Image 1 (cartoon, rainbow, N blue to C red):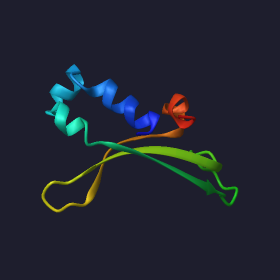
Image 2 (cartoon, helix red, strand yellow):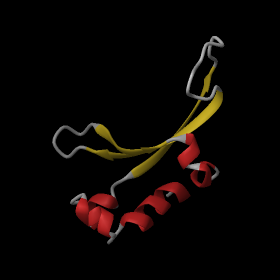
Image 3 (cartoon, one colour):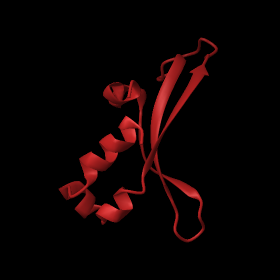
Amino acid sequence: MRPVTIWFIDSYTGSDLAKNRNWTDEFISQVVALKATYKIDYDNTISPSPEGTLTHVFFVVRDQNDGLWKILEARSPSAQDNLIDK
């Protein structure tokens, strides 16, 4: 299991936030972290987002009804600096 997935599971298991979101420990144990790295090159117009190579971490879980993966939570580059290298 990748360190960022372990971080998510360890951070949320038994937490008050997980309880407020009605996430059981069993549900949390099924979450997988995916890291997406991509390059953005804007046309030099005003943009609120940085350009260059960006990395986002998506926490996904398989829907029990249809089997499709759903994004449970995502971290933007500025909010995940400590997660990107894991």
